Image (cartoon, rainbow, N blue to C red; front, side, top):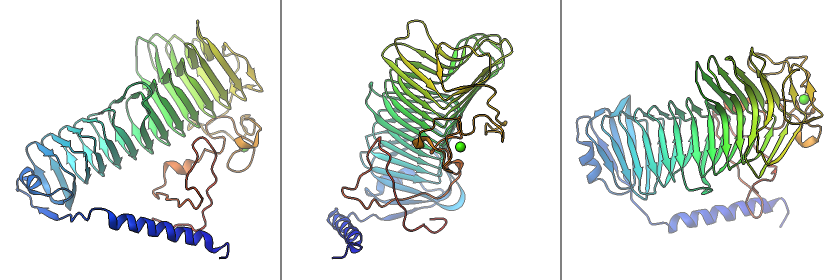
Length: 429
Ligand SMILES: [Ca+2]
């Protein structure tokens, strides 16, 4: 056997195994049920068999809807398909819904996999257990997850989203290219949030990786301390996030990142924290015990008219280690820590946060090649520096699929894996 054939034969073998897997699955015969406007949707759902597809004509359907078996609900026609009453989904199987508008709340139980594509949910979603998959959908009434996993792609949430599980349960919550217009807070979860817009973020007793996000906290007035991103007894990794906060009036500290008893890596982020009122603006505040905080290549710009601005704060009683290097902060800022190889000068960035041509942050980040920018030059300080900064990740409509032609077929967590792409997909695929 020639070496060049081996990958192909491995692929063929895998394909054969996959096909074998398919034919040995129970051969469910899903029927397609056409539901016409004016029909009793609940009665039609009751009459359908597990695994059936309901093709529902556009229109408004009243009454509460209960789904207690695996089903697929899709819209027929270009008009709005609206379910006016509350919807409950309670099955261990899979339910898939696409192009529906839900006027009321959705309650999900039973531990199954529920997916929404191109849906508008005007009420709240409550989910206990199981797994939610939401694509190109919008939720107006907020989400409350209890032990439920969530994968979101281009998911928009208009109000607060909370996820709750026992400490360090590590239930996955993965979001990319999403928009959260109010606080996203999770307890016990393992979050990965990439290339999304956030208003505020909080993790307790869990872990979170935030890459390439724009976090913008804004408030016209408040009377207590607040933080834009915060962690409590958690492990956090922040790469290439643009973290901005503006508070117009009020008293109390405004923080970009607040860490209490956390281990954190904070690499190549830009903090622009502006408490316009009379109190403190703080980029990073460290508190609690048993903490290790590594801060590398960040722009730290706390500012307000009163001049009470802190780059990195070590709060009273903090027990742990803080390492800061290759950062840039304007002159005259207060700090409780020492910075190594850093610049005390105006970072020079435009309104959108990207570096101006003459910015001193260019090629002034960590010099190790592993931090190099995508163009091969030395790391730029701030959110536009380093290998993970890629503005196209906010906009691509092309999902990518990888065939991992390695043995065994796996990608190691926490290790940089190189995936060679031999054939580019046709545009749009
Ligand atoms: Ca560079």
